[in-house]
Image 1 (cartoon, one colour):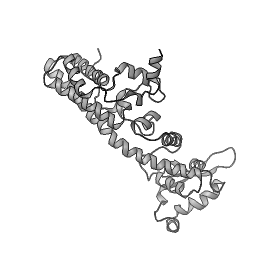
Image 2 (spheres, helix red, strand yellow):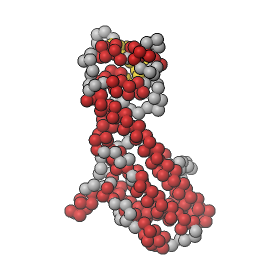
Image 3 (cartoon, helix red, strand yellow):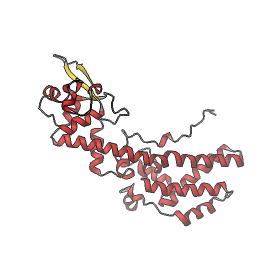
Length: 284
């Protein structure tokens, strides 16, 4: 038997903003389909970066994304990037000094090396705002969407990573302290998660996993990974109630389930997350 310990820190349910699937953006974080499409499309070229002032965005790729203003990259860069690299002239173009956020480099080609630049995310947003193109507007909206996504995920994460993990831990340690059995503690924890899922949604965990595996972007995920903030609170409250019953000494699982049902039964509509799955089941 392996002696390797499982780290119970909630990392498996933390969502990376640059890799969040469409289902999470729309169902859990409540962005529109249009916003989700834009984020999925643009973040491949302009991912959100931690340091907004570090030169990490390829200027030529940005120029292509904002509709190739001036038609030639060199002319556009001469007007909008190079002046910002000189501290003595940047004030004529912008109230902010971007000189430390731009790095010039050369791209190797079959012919002559091409001049390119790495720019910061802040400066990339500045350049997008100056572009009078439909593509420039889309990039500006993308930056705004991603900023909002950060805020929503920060509000969303504590329930997901802290509250739920703490409840899991409290159940696990409570059962161990009373029985001395890690195996029984794991079994009790699994029972509570599965029971709560079925009580609040009307579907067992196995059906959630089966359905999510058939939906693009949610394969391998569970109910905790897709619920929006409000529904996640319902799930958390039901799990907390179940945990408190266990810790108070109630061991009859049927009794625990009945008590959870009286308060939390069917409070979450699974159709919101499993569109088409219920219809497929009925057709079988």
